[in-house]
Length: 399
Image (tube, rainbow, N blue to C red):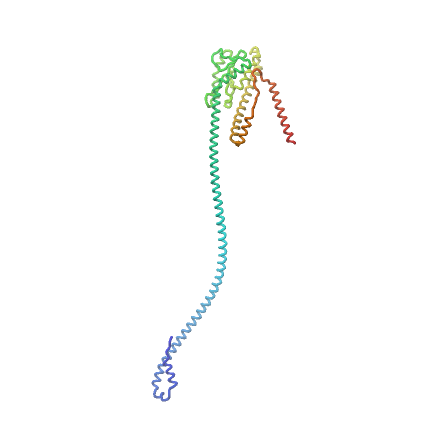
């Protein structure tokens, strides 16, 4: 702000240098100059007031600014403290972040290792699955092969059974003829009565009939029904003169399992179901009747004893056949498992030992009868030998 005080300065300079004569003769000029100076003075006063007012405002503004500065300083101090806290927290967070990053890296490495392990396990699992599938396929093929072999073996065995059934009539005839020749019993080729039974022998003036019966087809279930029908059809023989009222139907040994009934009392005659193995003891029992001059001389008790012996022979022979038949299948099953379950090298060794073995059962001589005393003596010898071996084993274990 620029102020012009020339009039006021001129007035005061003029007053200080005015003379008496100038006061008298130049007063009018001085008064005019005073008016101008006064106007300037008035303006100066106003300006000074204005300046004072401005100064007051500025002082007030300065105070306000100072107060604001103080508040700002306080806030700045607070902000500084907060900033320090934030900085400390930032340092803590950075430390925590660093730790988390380190843990993240470690976890990433672990995950990578686990993924690698899982990949390896997956590959091994796939290999194992492939191997197991290959083994399973091999086993299935081997099982199928074994199944086919067993089916073929069963078919071959069954075919052999059927062949045996087809030859059964001839087998029975040969067996009965041999028994009759060995024990001097008459085998009747041409019977003097109606009908043609398969086999007829004559003991004590009576004709005893042995008819061979075998299954006609593959199914054994109908065989018992077939035998029941045959027990009725043989009644035509009993009506003939001198034909014994006991008729024997001879069946194959391997059909015993399906037969539940072995004797039929048909009123005026009896029918017995027997096997080839039981023929000799039955015929020998019947031959005992020749020890009597006349059949009517037999007492009821003697007849009862003969029937009891024949029945016991029949039962024992049938049980022996059942047991042999059961164990034959068990032995065949064991032999099949040897071929399947034993390691190949061990099985080859078993075959070598098997080839080296030889069984020599006692040879049967036609002119020599099997002695009961010899059988008992042999049984006692085997029993003593077995007891001796058990005693030796116990003595070795006690040492």
